[in-house]
Image (cartoon, rainbow, N blue to C red; front, side, top):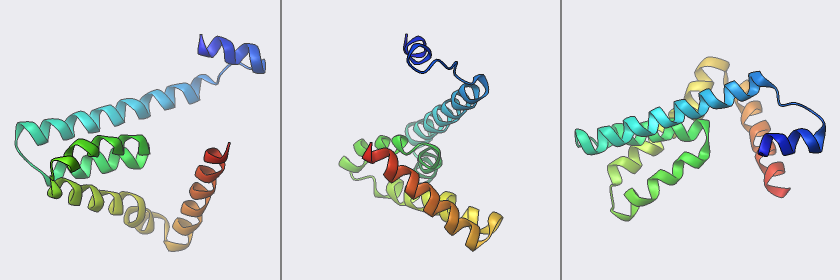
Length: 120
């Protein structure tokens, strides 16, 4: 019903390519979080699950909410892995691939978009 309402309100049909891309991002986030949970509970690893949750959070920040139960139980190594993975995925990897100036521009553009969407 949501897509039908959108078509009725705007008169536009959603772009199929963007819907497929959104679906694939969600599948990737699901795979990363499931792998993180499997590593945490299955093999008792603590650092790698944090890194995997950070990678999922770099794609969609909502995934960081998965950390809340682990923080209440004081799994600090998992949180350290999360911070390390976030640093690598958001700062270090783009600096290496794009250069510092382009990374700074992308982060400021992303920050502006996030602030604009939160104000609406």
